[in-house]
Amino acid sequence: MNKSTFWITLIVLLTIFSLSSYAKVTLDETKMYLKTTPIDYITRGEDFTYNSWINKYEIKRKNYQVENSSIKSKIIIGDKIGDYIEYDPQKDVKNISINLEKINKIRNQGDIIGMFVEKGKLYVVIEEIKLSDKEIKYIRYPEDITILIRGIFVSPDHCIWQTIDPPPNQYDWDKYGLVYYGGMVENTHVGMVMFESDRIMKCLSGGYDNRSGRPITLSTGYKSEWNYMPKISFDNQSSIEKEEWHRFWFTTKDTIVQFDPDTKAVKMVGNPLSVKTERMEMIGGKLESTFDPDYNSSSYKWTKHFENNLLSYAKYYPVLYELHELSRWTALLNALYETGFIFENIDLNNFPYIPTPVKTPVISVIKERTIEDTTETYVKTITRQISLTGGVGLEEVTLQQADLSELKKHWLSQYENGSPKITCICD
Image (tube, rainbow, N blue to C red):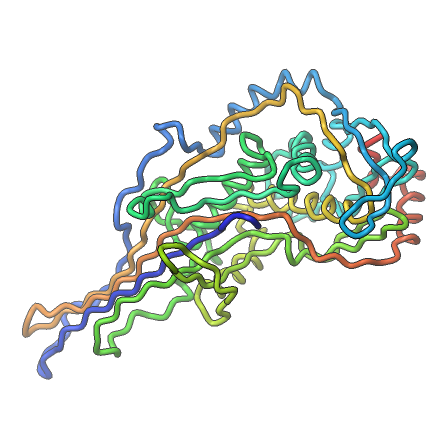
């Protein structure tokens, strides 16, 4: 991803006061709280809750939905040679329509697992949604797929991403993060899903909501990064002041997609979304990557927990499932490019754009342990401070070239026999 992603600041401060050998501990408590009250950027018109954004979008998209049952596009069906597509400009370039009604119908039936091209038409293959996943209630807007196509094939980035970065002035780092979008997803539902998923990940890792300042309380199974940090101890009889920086991000980099350039078919293998972390270093006032995942760190352990339980958290925050499902499409579309099938342009006139957030509050969560004794007012305190921002990058997949000819024949046979799991979305 060509933008910095999920920053975490971890500052550890340990203050030790010696105790009398005759002292008796009368107080030993640990508490958590926010360093400062979050700044309200919603009333300033720079941040938006997901539900309020959806309400505005629903109103604006009604006219667009009536006027557009399909989107015009132009495709090239060639052969991928190195970094280029080799094709005949006379026979391999076609004007097509992306059918929003068919996209809407098949997405509501299940999650996409494959794509293939046959006689200049693009087909998609889905698997039925598991019964447990049906408990997750959310909306799938068919026009989101056209935004993904535009971002991957037409935008200057040739991928989609979103990030929350520290502001230029270092004194504002503990106040807010600046939201950036790539692949022309700003002011779209895709961009809003990426931002909100990133914000939710940030809040879950720190244990507090960054807007309300309230602690997150979910049922059994919820863990924040604090659960993986060592217990506050006073064994070290010295003063320690240390800064540690980490970043977290959603990615499709580990998503395995098989592709067959000859049959122009792609198939997803395994999970579509993963969560990464690495340690950062402050060099010359800028955070630089160390490419060190630090497998023993609390941040790495939390990302594994979050990744493994993502769909469980989606029952509380359905937007996480939306990101999970959209990541399937981006992974397959990225692989489709490797078969030599590309969208050359896409017509999105009068699209229902609604402003997406440009700022969101940064919070500092303090965990403090205090011990007092009977002889004096000696106090021992250790403070861990965590300041979070975040990001999403859906630009890479793990490609595996494979012979999918028999699988494509099977899919075509299912389609011809009327299977609802396969449909043509571009013709």
